[in-house]
Image 1 (cartoon, rainbow, N blue to C red):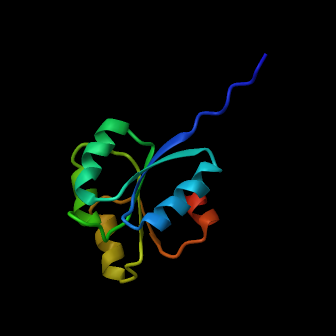
Image 2: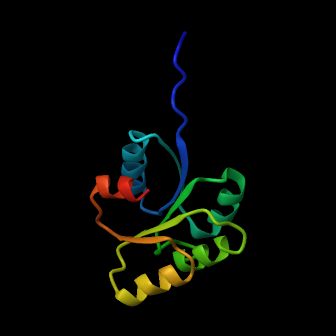
Length: 119
């Protein structure tokens, strides 16, 4: 009898840097995560509604809508865990991100294994 492949955990990665998004997706794929990439903030809400991910990894500096507003809007209808992954190091950005509903705030660059552990 063939063994069924383990189910992958769906992750929505909202990141506008194509190279970084691909690297993160490939790395997470090796740890049983199925990553869908969205490159614009204004597309995030529809993607979360359609895909019902187990986790959202969210950049703050996005075209068309910044990550803070994306997180705020997601919290209106979803309790999906949101991990902010950003280069914004200011403590006030970190506080604001958590206050708008993010569950974690991780600074870029991040060691890939740390990202997996936090996911």
